[in-house]
Image 1 (cartoon, one colour):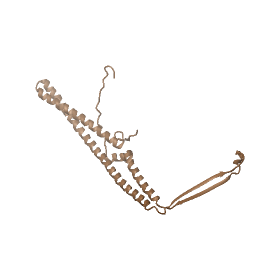
Image 2: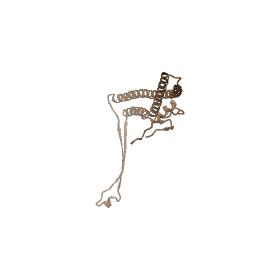
Image 3: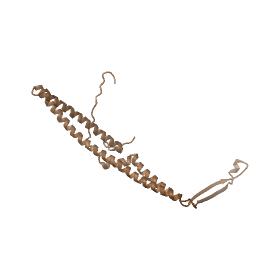
Image 4: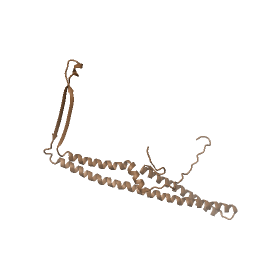
Length: 221
């Protein structure tokens, strides 16, 4: 900005046709948010730990196989002539004879942890859903509120215009003109405040769902 350059600020318009349904926001949130993806991961890890604990209680078998060639010679070239084929298979078994109940204790601990995580994830899911439902409700309220304040601002502006014309003609007191001015100013501030709340609620929905409801596309970075 240099010299006499000016900056003109324009208030953002309200997208009256923009519709935000709770189910749509929930669907996008569970598909896009890392929080929702973590719910599935936590449950899978808990089930894995239980399976691992159970698997360590019984017979363990390890199977390994080797295949190769060997030879000995006086020269490097002769090493590769008529090599000997070597193959081996090894099976190793491990059976716990007595572990004083440690294996069973590990399994019970893993199962208890799985149950705890299941409850915790379900509670986190409900909190996650409720946050979205509340935000959608707030957004729709702000959408209605901005329509009301917009209409009130137009009425107050028209009222002030008429009051100004009457004051010029001399049939309205300065007190009444001042009242009309204050009402017009208050209506404008209420509208700007509603506009701020509307877009604030909308961008919070975008954050919660990672979805652009204006363009109907997922938000990717």
